[in-house]
Image (tube, rainbow, N blue to C red; front, side, top):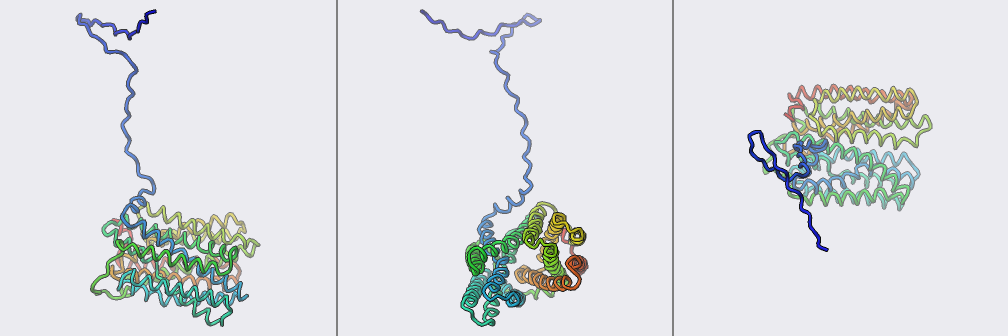
Length: 438
């Protein structure tokens, strides 16, 4: 049988009105219309992707985060270790307070040396001293050494370099002339602070209870040394050392002293808020929820810091006004006695702190000479630590005499003091933080 192949029929000709014949092309499915491509919108966190595409930024940020985690671990670990081995929370608290006082004295000096001689040359030896202090504390506690050795050992950890300040100094060096990217970087650093302060105590408590009492301090020492080695190995992003230093101390810069009073007030706000929240929950038999509620507050600040980095910065006064308004929510929630309401109030209060910290730190960068930037940043951190100590002590006294609900008045007063400090700082410096992004 012969097979006949069928070809598709040719299209029939058409006659036009003028008698001309038009031959149609072979019909087929009409080609799909190509829609015009819409321009892709940048994602909400596109500024952060652009930030970390810069050479060397991922390396020093990884080391920065590893080395920064122990900041939230050392205090909790020391208290839990000493209390479990010596049976005295009074001794543990006194040792921790001594370490904080030593940090307030030593940290600005370490930062000044860092500005003068470079990050790698100073940070690594200082880190070794701090790690040796932590290891000495472990040995003294375990072998029942005299109490004074605990104070001496823990004071050695005050040599810990201000890793957050050094990281911010690197961003400032890399992002010269790009104010928007610098704002994003400062927001990321603040979010990293909050994340480490949130995760550090949780990790320390877990290690001290689930592994052995010294595990938290030991892990913190390992993290600190490892992270600092990674951080300082990134020499390409390290700010250069100025051959000549012609600038006076940052304390003499107009606007810096009122700004440090602002940081002192913010520290008092943080310390008193923590004490008031713990006491309020404990008074209602909810002490076990204290860690979760405080972590929620830190998480709110962390997320708000990241979001704030994607928008145009506000003035310092506006940020502190919002913060002062947010501080009225926890007292109102505490009066109701409802844990979910208090948790939400603390979450909102935490979200208001990050923009204030980011904007205030940006003003520190604006006021501090480039060759003394680490010192200026460390002075701000020292003021915060001093404020935390004062706020904790004041909040504890109010709890003791007037009750936990009344203690929430302390962070409100601290927020009002911060508002006064922000106005004085901007008036003395003659700049607005929003000018940095313009």
